[in-house]
Amino acid sequence: METIDPRVLLVQIAERLERLNIPYLVTGGIAVYVWGRPRFTADIDIVVELHESNLSALERALRELGTAGYLDADAMRDALRIGGEFNFIDEQTGIKVDFWMLKNDEFDRQRLSRRVAKTILGKTVYFSSPEDLILSKLRWYKASGSSRQIEDVESIVTISGDRLDFKYVEVWAAKLGCTDIFSEVKNRPKRS
Image (cartoon, rainbow, N blue to C red; front, side):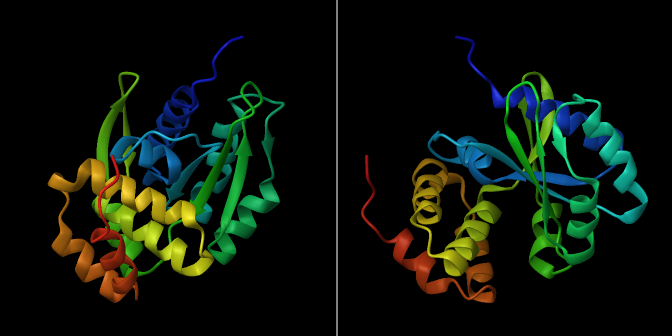
């Protein structure tokens, strides 16, 4: 049985976004893999700064990956209009890519400016910084109560802790209303 490597699809999509000059950052489980403990993730999450002027070009670029993949042009337009997300499902691997629209708020603009280039399969791919990934996970936890978000934060703090800018996280956690959650996670005994 052939192993499916989501990094191949990630690189293909990153190359298309770069070619179209669409700023992006990879977040979610794939980014946790970079900054924390590896864990299974069933999808790829990418935040994009998309505009009406490059919507059709992105649709064409994604369809280049295969005609049998799933992509709904109406869902793309709706995501852009309401600031939501749309999905692309790769025909060869079945991997789902969630494209999240960059919000026009201070935090999203900040995290896009702080994205970090990493080399994946010999290509440059931009990821959320570990600090902004923590903050994003704290926001998701606050909204959903999903324990997976807290597990991811703990993983990032444990693995990347010495390199983290905790002052930055604390300032933004306060702005996002997540100070208590972050303090609790940060002060928990570390698991091995």
